[in-house]
Image 1 (cartoon, rainbow, N blue to C red):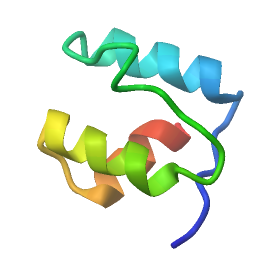
Image 2 (cartoon, rainbow, N blue to C red):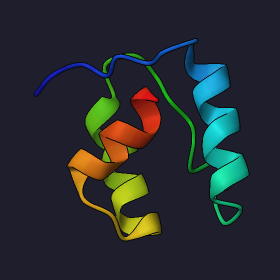
Image 3 (cartoon, one colour):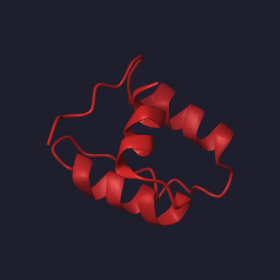
Image 4 (tube, rainbow, N blue to C red):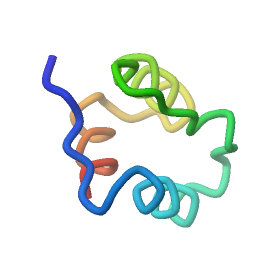
Length: 60
């Protein structure tokens, strides 16, 4: 699995996600380096989107 390539850093990506998906909480968006799969899994469940869609959203 490829590591996430987050443009502008995680804080900016998190802000974009919260703007576009108001149902996401800070707990949903907890991100630790090396835990990409855990984050993607949570977002897939919460947003009902595929892994590819989640990666595009996060990577901007």
